[in-house]
Length: 99
Ligand SMILES: [Zn+2]
Image (cartoon, rainbow, N blue to C red):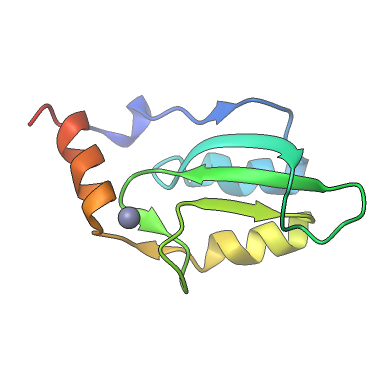
């Protein structure tokens, strides 16, 4: 699959700074949403949600969805994602490749 076939799905509008990073890394981000972050720590529960593509995860955990209450925190999470070859990712990648 070539990178220009990859399209990020925006469920909600992303702040410009975040959108710039995401659009530059469509091979990493699958989906952007804004919702209620159960662990954002904010009283109103607001958080940005990003679903990573198969093959990527958080740097310090086997988590494939990033939930952060601020643009800065989300950017720092995004900048530290690492490649992932867990069973779940491998299965999804095989499915995408039609194996
Ligand atoms: Zn994984």
